[in-house]
Image (cartoon, rainbow, N blue to C red; front, side, top):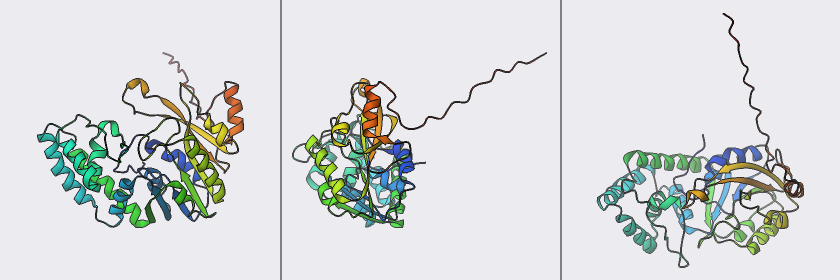
Length: 314
């Protein structure tokens, strides 16, 4: 069972970590490096002996550094969310906006956790001034005891993984992180999905995707990059223009996110790499498959056992 981190966000890779892990389990490396750690779900499930986890969002890094230094503990989280949850319920949800205002002024990591677990649809969105601006999820009883216990246990699990390994958390952009990479590292890059996600800390452009490609190549390290290949509406053509000299392996994943149900659809997820991954093909081969209208999935599907009809003779 996958370790679920206490911080929530859209696009979290919880249901994809087994697939990602299966693609790196036979790769040798000295250090696991994430330039876009996000919630940290992939690294925490890979459980490397040594890891460099970085993000341009300072609140994520502050939170996990707080766990590392034991300023944030399971018991503190439980007491905090229990107390704040009572205020949220008593105010019929209006207290959420008091916490949001307080967080935007003081940036308390526990307030960040509170907002992450009670905002609308698990979104993590900031305005141009860096202020968290996601509205309330409209559930005043959000922090019922069962959920508080669940979150505090998630903090406990992550704390144990951090303590057993050698984890470093840094607030910096991907360029600074890749400048620290050596050829003995394995880089897992999970940038904002180009053409899909936009917010203050995670805005992403074609120029940045090109630069990421160049920096990964220049690092001389092995790398994997998570991105999307297609959904029922369109295909991510940036894969074929920017990552054309790479390998690709794919699987299907359904995202239960989006403000409207019609926006919650299955996506063909892709791992791009300079390594030959299990079931991978070249990006050029994938482009050819799409042009021919063939399946975009490279992972092998398990054949369903045929049901045999039994005849009972009386």
